Image 1 (tube, helix red, strand yellow):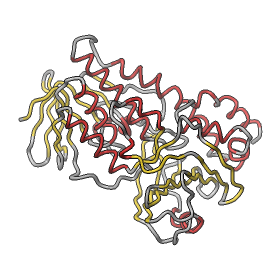
Image 2 (cartoon, one colour):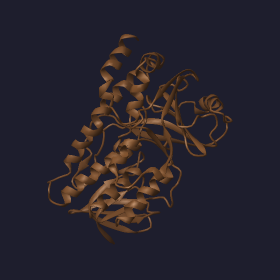
Image 3 (tube, one colour):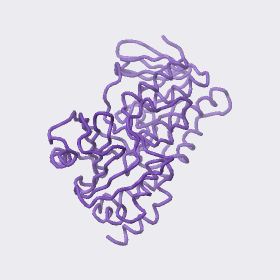
Image 4 (cartoon, helix red, strand yellow):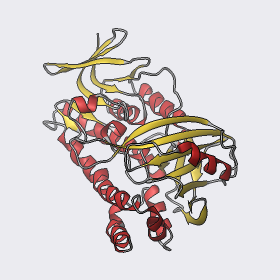
Length: 375
């Protein structure tokens, strides 16, 4: 039996971020990950450069492209271009590299890392959490962090996160080469995807393409969509490594903590319900979770409720507006593109949201009113 202060389930961005911040303040941390190595994840890898302020070490080692321009299109035409603010660009990371970077820094601060650790059971005995793997390994700790992504069974079991889960159905494609995608440019395509959109993010020698739908739980006809989208990007319609997934998106304010337990990242349903941004909330939640756990273990607070409150303030309030925009925009996408994207100031506003410079609350009431009046 391994004894520690905090057990973290999941070595993705949220779990590794939590581990680093906790270990960096002198806490004893055990980070468990079911995979061996750093596998390809179904994630576009985009995140606001503003997250750098959360870390004392540079994230640039995982950044493969700095996005300064965003192209929008409707059914592969009617293009609009937005320039991102020079001091707040959008970064594209290779997720395998980002996870490795975060875990390496967590280990350097003293985190114990257990890979190939598939969790079989999670129990609480008195004030101690016990986690058991399928191969019989056991870890015991005072606090448990659930960070095992959108497929996590543990958040629901311990009544954390939204009571009703809402999913975006996504297909990701990793393509070799850059095709026709311009340097420092990402692409958002509306119109081809029913109740959703497609995106293309450049990496050094490859491109991440994604297709996502945000209303309903059915996968769109992604083969038909990709048959049109990929040639427009300079690829064959059958190219790429493909992966379907269900991504938990923000679905209302909810409790993210319990007695000695909390949930972070995708397992907490923090993903942006309009643009599917998941990395920034994962990293923010890891940082906020670590702060609250540290104060609790030091006896400065009686519980972990400050974590739920801080995530509501730092992320949830903006996502509440993002969800409302999503519900209207994706039900009337053509009108949404006309009034929400093609307006002179709209692309710049979206660029500012992507870069972390502003939240949905800054634009939501005007956008929703405009969309509803013009239906």
